[in-house]
Image 1 (tube, each protein chain N blue to C red):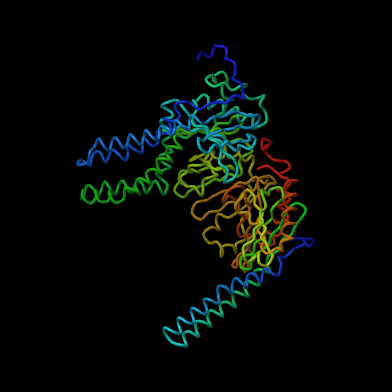
Image 2: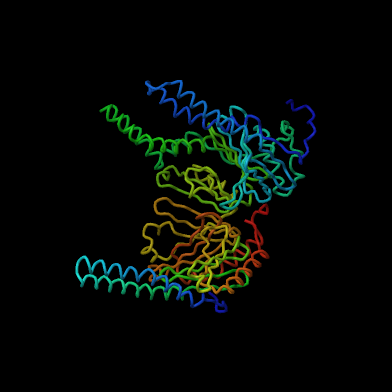
Length: 157
Length: 454
């Protein structure tokens, strides 16, 4: 958008969270797939399966890297901007006055790294203003700022 | 009551009111019909079993339903408290619902067949939000419901002085409903013709024709087909019946408090949509209707509808004109969206690569108050969104769009998936509009078209 828009990115720890989630999925798959194919058919097939899973995991990791980096938000005077996406690039503009409520959630992985997800809700279900991986302090501050701004500028339906 | 009589003193507003004593009968009515439908074939076919036994079980069930309804009637009461309506109900789990009338999105009066026989009606208050349940008063006498509706709407608009003074149960005739100016009425022959020219209508005709032909050729095969497909046939014809019933003798009228819609053959519905509550409008031109120049006009209202055949899609939308010609649809559209922009600009020709089927219909326009966008593959859909109602603005660019230098802007309005989309526009235009549209929406919010929206 404009040059003076100050974009803020989620914490770099979000990438760590995503990597851990990926590893927790990929490692058992690699071991189980490799062992199963190796034991039942032949050793070379087991190694091949393991290698394929490894290659796929590395590719997904590169994608996750770009995906996490693409996420950013900006607080402007009248509206809130969220940008995300690698393949499908999305940018949402939500006026503060349209905000119905804000919620802060944190799953087990995010919590372990002291992160939280902030989501802004409007009356439209399609409004897509969600920022994952904010450090807890930032998430709380953002929630309070948004709530205050939303109240000050609330517009009826 | 003789209209010449002096009105009896209006009852105190703070007093609790009860629903009509016959409400349990209306409630049980649905079960009664269901029981008859289930029991009748059993009684006709099942000769060996004790018929009396079946009857006793069925009437026992009906009795239970009636008693439950009676208890519910006994524990339900309502009153108007300042600018809110309070409804208390529940025997074991008491619930007390306070409905702020300024938040009411629409008020409907629904009358099932049995309710109409008894002269009763159900009042439904539609609230914004997808999870909040609106209020229900089932049942009141029909004139009571009418009077209470205009009173509630007047309080909701913050003008109790303009409202019919003192709601008096049993004597509402002293306050005739607010004057109305008819805008549209739907001829039944056109409704039937238009319904035949839909997918569902064609399917219904196909089923009937197939069964008739089959029974002429081989009655046993026809019986087998009917037996096998009973459930889906019932579903199909229920859908057709609902659509017919909801469009039957539909009239839309202009009243001081909003648009009045009335319709129904057996179950009648009267809805009032206050001005300024309309979030978006949609004009749909199906392919099969094109030779006749027919179109459908839907409006979106923030507020859930409880029972609807197609829940996901139509929870927030109401059909103002089920089928109308260009002039009729335009007249109602202008009442909802004054002076929609007429000049629409198509996307760049290279958008054909991304949207080969849609391309011919894609276009959008804006006049500082309303955004219009057209879309659709087979049927053309024109969406109208007042800028003041836009909830959020989104830009989306997919991989193919990126290669073609295109992007899409969605203008979301209240509801599940209601929006106007500026599909496959040039990226330079999109960047410009992403800077311009938020400012336009902000300006529109500060000077809304309909001042009634408060």
